[in-house]
Length: 308
Image (cartoon, rainbow, N blue to C red; front, side):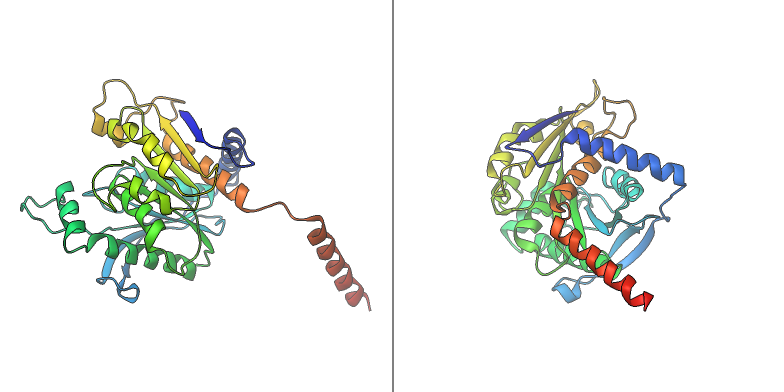
């Protein structure tokens, strides 16, 4: 794995975050913690101006950390498709509540029964239904997480889901629980606005993880464009390149099949979890001495009252 920082990094280093993630995972195993089985959900985007019911998969960890992850699959996929499946089942072991949602598709213009890329381009140029409906579904998912006691969340998208996710952060978020960061896996900067991530990342101000395989040529070729477009603070944009095994097709590398690296087979999951740990560490400052002193005084006052 090669990590390419763009600008100054946050206070926690990638190595520190990886060690923290590994330690927490080991502790969970020692304690016998296990996530509950995935729960199929029927959600409805109508209250957010959407078209109505859609499917989702919820997975709640044994020891929740109060943070959710909304996952967006790739073109032609579903909430349990490649890449999102690995993350939605792995991240609960780190304490995250995951909610993987079904994304809408454009009109089937050529009648082949699957969503082709040109059909997304036709949609954003004409009826413009896919992106607004996707925004409504993401808002609905975040609101559902809030009913579970979740106060903050990450948004993670793969392939087409990364295009939709970037656009949502830029233009679709309203008054839902705050997003700590956005991870785009296999992002590409081509085509029309808002399909072209380089045309929407300038409106994104939260931390971004841009992760792709080294032989995913469309992603690699536009990596510099995406990083240059980012509109957030210095150090907020992180690019991670994972090494795909030799002999894979470009599409297999896009889906991060057969990664080289540690040999654990979990390079994707651990890279995403490490970045999330970094973002969380930077977002939650250490308690100030004054706050600690006030907390101590309050505790002392409580003891005095109980002693009377």
